[in-house]
Length: 468
Ligand code: NAD
Image (cartoon, rainbow, N blue to C red; front, side, top):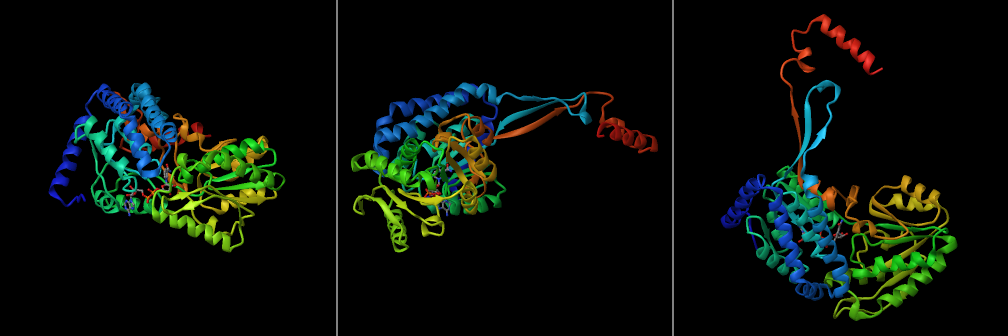
């Protein structure tokens, strides 16, 4: 375990702080070089990463490559392509009070940043933010999840192969390690995880007034109206819900289906889930016994309420296999509607009109994403206007995550701050406002004391004219 009271650890973190200071003066090419080294290591060691994902979560290689490796490589590519532009000062024309001045926004590195990652996409959610932080010119400490120990070790190995220990340091361990790290005055903390731990991270960060980005979870709703293409909706819902065994922050947590399409939608989701996810050798496992038991108990509570499971495959505690479950005729008051499910159980709730669906969505804390399957613009616009979420994806689920040009993040209890692409660069940068004054007479000097009645009259007249 590390401890920030341990003089060696403190010295290491202080050395990183000093390095971060010197990294401010590096040319952009130095940042790019780091990212290229990282990219090369990933490509050269892909099979080792695949094995780590399989060892921790039983992830099929194709799923790991297409979601985790692909997104990290795409993030790095986007940064490399745009970094010169992003890091350039942005000219800001003068406003009236400062006519004659020259102003710009400069993007400087924040300094030493901490990235705390979860276990569900253990490579992507540790290395993606790390790449953004490096692109913005920072030194980074990464704390991967202890629940994906093989991947955590792999990320540590990657960091020592690619970077000097004062540029990037991976600190492995669980909650105690995380708590210890949080006592150190980092310049930014980027946390991905549950809302409960997010609130602990935020209060710890407050002690040092460290800014935080919180990428949290929650119950992302998926609304299917009668104008939707039902079979296509069912296929896309099944894929995004049951991939990674439902352990995805942006998986649809529950489905709201309009009366007219309710039965057909449920049938088609069951059909696609059976077809795509019934081979245990290509299906991700639940991460830990604790999470497995949590899901078994949740399902048991639903059964006691009389909820019908129309798809209910095998669940084997021995290797934490939890097959897809689809629940029909679920009430909004059901136990399953209390917390984020974060597993392969999909409740489908019936609604009669759009106002009812909007009210159900608004009854829950604001979500990371809202999914709408509808071919009627009136419906999509109404749902978007009357609800709030970090993102909206129409006629599919989770696709906004894959668009490196779209800022990614939550709102309210699903988190705040933004990641990916340019938004990630800005998150890890200090936007420094710079204004250069002219010599001699300036707008401000006209109002220097002495405060005469004439100056006051002129100012009053000017404002009456200008702000009329
Ligand atoms: P978690 O909050 O339990 O753990 C996340 C990290 O925090 C881990 O590295 C863990 O070691 C550390 N940690 C745990 N307790 C801590 C404490 N008391 N103090 C400091 N650090 C602590 O989350 P998880 O179980 O790893 O991941 C699942 C959650 O993450 C879900 O809620 C999911 O929706 C969310 N999530 C969000 C996103 C996103 O991008 N918004 C992505 C993936 C997962």
